[in-house]
Image (cartoon, rainbow, N blue to C red; front, side, top):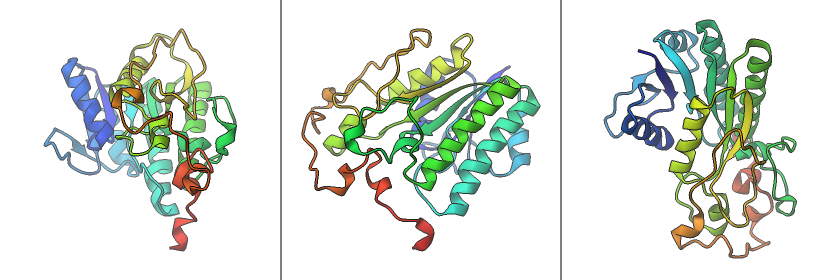
Length: 261
């Protein structure tokens, strides 16, 4: 029976996606480098190990949801292995196995070095990564473009914004409700003629730093807004003297090189 390969399935977002698809009866092969805290069935594999990825991709895979890898800044070797080598292994193993669709978890940090007064930023604006992590996600996006243009692997690259509970007005402007994100992932799997698309994974928040270009063919719109949370208030002004408010990437833009630590 064809199944979707979900990487990063033990993480917060991966766990939510496992539950989302289980409730809808979709067959999922879940994988991660660590076991799931909720005890869910997750096959252990290191995405930097090409042979392990090939074994996963050989299990009657119809599409890939690639949420595996590092989700924060780290030293170069860690980012290289987890996010760059891992992404290459996913796309190349998919090509070899004849898998024709990938939903790729990118990040708003590919554009995190824009000054706050340049917002709102659109998905077509130039890359301005704020970290090695942001660079790795820009690499994954451009790799996905190559594999679409040259090898016909369709891809939805989702620049995920703040998917956890927001703790500040800044984060409330960037919030992405996890059901909004899951619905976007599902649309990436099911949309006919997906092609290659880049979309911000962000809910309908006031004062958002990132805004999507209208895409009626995609047929997805967020159903939630951070205003429904009550606090923190996305309408609240941001202290211009706070270094987190200099750039759209927040603290990622303020950190130095992690290999210097």
